[in-house]
Image (cartoon, rainbow, N blue to C red; front, top):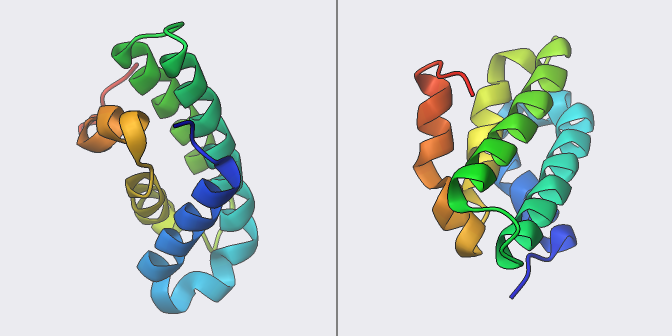
Length: 117
């Protein structure tokens, strides 16, 4: 079953909201927009993966690139910069299905290690 981007976006935002706790009010405007963008990208990557147009490694790479873009935008916002990684980690954990299994801890581990694509 394909990813429902609207539902995924809501799940990612909710996960990030819980992770941000009391800081959510300050970061919500930029975080919600960027996490919706990340959910849309995840939906596109999932579709490519399901159609066999990309393999698991390429799906991880594409998601990591999208994650980097979202993180860069969030870090430009002074209120969101300190917790951008926390928000994205929480949101990424909300991705299920085959894509969620593929990107799982590997993308997060790549970022924590400072690994370049």
